[in-house]
Image (cartoon, rainbow, N blue to C red):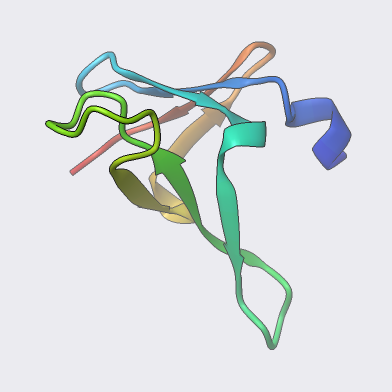
Length: 77
């Protein structure tokens, strides 16, 4: 799957039902040696901050459960 094919997918936390924007809003952290994705940094719209990107969540790639047709679903701890 190409990044251009998943950029418009909504990032959703299955544990809380909260939405964290689209993949285009996230930053990816890569393992420098292997090039594998280690984690995603996504906006936390439900934090106490008032700005859109006031707070962020770092999601380990292992927390991603499903990359579906319209959504990327993860489980927060």
